[in-house]
Amino acid sequence: MVPIVSNGYSIYFNQEGYVSLNAYLKENTFSKIFILVDESSNEFCLQNLLPQIETETVIEIIELESGEENKTIETCAQVWNVLIELGADRKSLMINLGGGVITDLGGFVASTYKRGISFINIPTTLLSMVDASVGGKNGVDLGGLKNQIGTITNPAMVIIDSSYIESLPQNQMRSGLAEMLKHGLIAKKSHWEKFKQMQVIDFADFDDLIRESVEIKSDIVTQDPTENGIRKALNFGHTLGHAIETYFLENPDKTSLLHGEAIAAGMIMESFISLEQNLISENEFNEIKFVLNSVFDKINIDQSEENSIIELLIHDKKNEYGKVQFALLDGIGKIKINQTAENETINRAFLNYKS
Image (cartoon, rainbow, N blue to C red; front, top):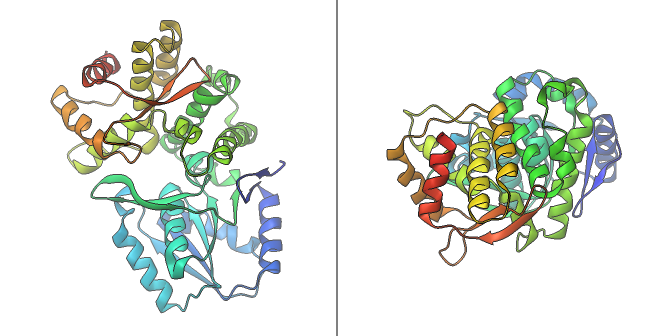
């Protein structure tokens, strides 16, 4: 597939990505190459990557524990110390091979180590392919709050190899699907329409849908790299979704949630807020709710927990001047940014979600 030229770097697909990687290694003289993995990408993906790399440069592997709970500044400090111990300098290269935690954290580590070293993202989950690895956002959580510390620094390139998702568990596939559905809802109605009948989608030949979803995100990011305007559209479903995800992460007695599962709930609720503010029709809302509920199990949120989740909204990094900011739908395929909603409306959104 034809590469996507994003904001100062390119996104390559499948074998073309490794051809471009090796050309990049030949054009640049790196002192060492560090590959950041978690236990899953180390076991299942690294064995596919290493034979593709044509270089005599020393390669070191750094393995982290998987999971959002490890996406912290403490983990970054551990990686920085390992880089120092292994002699990493400003001419080193980091390759982030893994899901969203690895690409988010690895990009942040690379963009801050010795004031910045080059890095490449090779996402291995559907979620990281269509979202986390693209756009230049890097960062970690702080005190359980999502993505509070980070940078906007572009990778040297992104390589999307769809073979990595062939053995992905079904819940991980659904998690990535949430972001693809979001891209259609906010920017391209025809992309959304392709997912309305999940039973007829051939997931064995998913490459074109992945590329289209990545292209939608890349187009938005290219227009607004630093999120001062249209890039806020990508936050649809994430204001409430992140608050739900954070609440479940902070309460170990709750069933753990994947990012996409929380975002799907957030999209239903924020679609309801869009309906309440006369931005979408009741038919559009019902369509969105039906499709999302057909893919994702409903999250059990007690009424007593709603206020705690709403309180977390004020810490959302998207807020400005102390006001909670929403990106709301303006019909399917369009968005309105910098929207607000009263707590009573948010409470009704929770009530509707659970109905």
